[in-house]
Amino acid sequence: MERLDCKSMSLEALRGALISRGIPAFRASQLRTWLDAGATSFEEMTNLPRSLQEEFRTFFWIPTVNIEKKLVSQRDNTVKYLYGLADGENVESVLMQYRHGWSQCLSTQAGCRMGCSFCATGMSGFVRNLLPSEMIGQIEAAQADTGVRVSSVVLMGMGEPLDNFDHVIRFLQMLSEPGGVQIGMRHVSLSTCGLVDQIYRLMEYNLQLTLSVSLHAPNDEIRSRMMPVNRRWPVAALLKACRDYAEKTGRRISFEYAMVSGVNDTDGCAQELGRRLRGMLCHVNLIPVNEVPGKEQRRSPVKRVRAFSAILERYGIPVTVRRTLGSDINASCGQLRRQAGETKD
Ligand code: SAH
Ligand code: SF4
Image 1 (cartoon, rainbow, N blue to C red):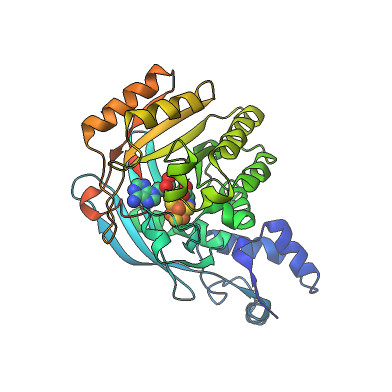
Image 2: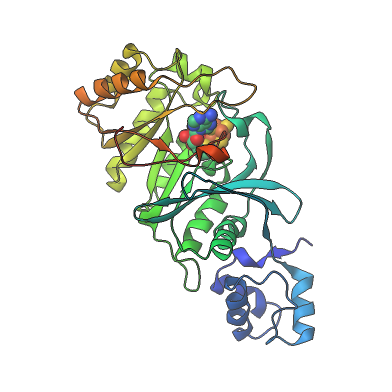
């Protein structure tokens, strides 16, 4: 029998699991309290009888997230972590300081199966989905290490969150559960490459998070070359889902647009994008693409980014050019390259 990841379970679910095994329900809150305090083994739960600790071990396990490597930027306070999981897999995460507090970029999968041409994570293929507790564990590990409180999270690390839908939804619930990390939905961004069917599923939850959509191109011709997922869900279907999403939730969609020199950064691209997004409750983030070793892509020159941005503004589309944090520690490598700054350059 496969053991249950007890750390991902709500207090209610823990109670149910214990009662069905004839264990008194109050043990569930003791267990939950230890898990929230970061316990990594049942032995350390000193208010549980030894026999119960041993019983727990037969049907529960506790996933762990350990810091294997840590890089601290000398330019800003950005910290990049390489975490090790219980089965030896590794994922990355970045902690960034903004004016309003600390924000953490989290991984949702080890690897990714979407294979975007510009992305470092996509290169190594897919390994597995992360558990809800392994997403929470990334926050706990960073908080314990630095002593700061993480006040917002972005699901923009390794992996495609909507390809790990159920675990991500459970993780989102856990963010605000009593005893947990206490991060409100308005302080969460979820980034997707555009799995249209899953966007509709997410819509049903009517969450107050920010949906960030990695668009990166104004049409199918260019987007299919950059993102294989576009062959399954073309631009028109994706933008329709985005309009529906914004209408249903009342939340502005944030479009990510990584500018690759000579690929998607022409005036023509900007005009086409402007025409297609006009009138939508949205915002565009322009990001000069991060150059990945072994890939040919080059970032667009600053002047090009500015011209592109000016065109979008003429279409009445709010646009931000993001500043990169932690550039000296390669925080921006492939995935973990989250940019900051509401600053228009
Ligand atoms: N799988 C999700 C979330 C993780 S990727 C997604 O694709 O949205 C997080 C963001 O990093 C996405 O916007 C993605 O397109 C972008 N990204 C990936 N590689 C990049 C690179 N080399 N330069 C700039 N942005 C990149
Ligand atoms: Fe996966 Fe996102 Fe990278 Fe594409 S950009 S390969 S969806 S992690």
